[in-house]
Amino acid sequence: MFTYPSTGLATSLPPDWDQVPGAVGCTLENRLFRDRHPDLTAAGIAVHGVSTQRPDEQAAFAAAESIPFPLLSDMDLHLAAALRLPTFRAGQDLKLKRLILVIDRSRTIRHVIFPVLDIPVAITEATNAAHTLR
Image 1 (tube, helix red, strand yellow):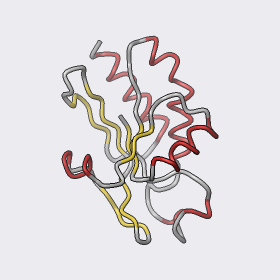
Image 2 (cartoon, one colour; image 1 turned 90 degrees about the vertical axis):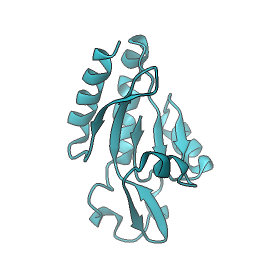
Image 3 (tube, one colour; image 1 turned 135 degrees about the horizontal axis):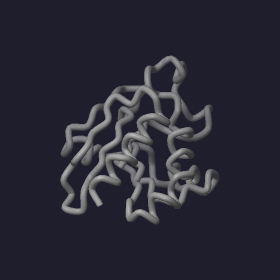
């Protein structure tokens, strides 16, 4: 499971979005997981993306980018509160900071990558960690 701040049209993002550390790269992260999805699925590894965006925004992004895995909305911040996920405020919205959790079949978090400073490297690390759980 990976969390990310926001995807979508640049016009829907707050002013100076590109100045917020870790905010830029959500589309890249989704695309990299998308590109690895066939191999991950073949290995029995599920992928889920989570953000605080509305489900309709996520669905439009998933359709436009051919995202094959679920993008889940935590717009009410229930998951963020339950797991004490890191957040930041952008404009009037609370956003999830980028992180990756590797969770086993019994729903135990086995590996955490935070902060995600290099998206491709973090995805490789998470993939390797997930492979060790099989």
